[in-house]
Image (tube, rainbow, N blue to C red):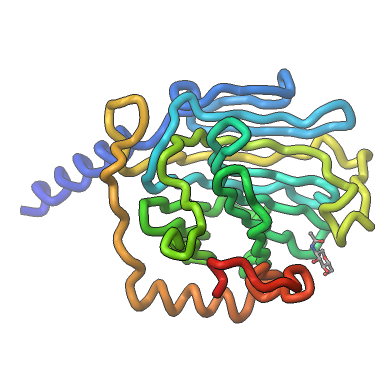
Length: 270
Ligand SMILES: *[C@@H]1O[C@H](CO)[C@@H](O)[C@H](O)[C@H]1NC(C)=O
């Protein structure tokens, strides 16, 4: 019996590996010349930024709904002024977009995770968070769970933000335009760190971020994911975790920014 169980374990890990992504197969390096690199046989990708340029990559395939996981290890040390953007986006003037942006900081000071959702070309839906760990020490999993009812942003499986479908209130929801996964590392020292007060220290360049264990669920063999894919509703534990993050780590929420929206908060916030 013992060896039989061992066999099952081997078998299931094989299936896992087979569904996990390979950077050579799934992504194109889009800019930054040799600053974007794939190695370890397609298991690891790195982006770097120096005085001359940043770098980026995007997925070969487009996705419409699904769960997309990526592990990132962010720029370590003095990363002030740098931004690592990791997002899904469709194309064109009325594009949809689901954003994670990691705003660097001076050594020992906290990164900000900046999130946004664009629908039909319109964003202005920022929420920002600190993390409950140092994102430069190890790889952590950043996920987007997207179906026709909601978009959930997760960090190490903890939901940090839910953008619910509010079409009932006249708010467009991303559900028709397939998106590609994009990532880039670039210099944004005009706004990123303490609102632009802290500049990039180029003597510390190149700055490098690492990616691994890309995984998609809901994928089919068609050009993009099967639109029928549905995620599970958040369970009670996940909802508690979400409240814990929003209470302790959220530093900005457009939905409570009355100064910014004196005519009234956006419809999805009401
Ligand atoms: C950087 O650290 C400062 C001081 O702790 C903090 O106010 C700021 O929110 C941090 N993050 C960024 C991206 O500026």
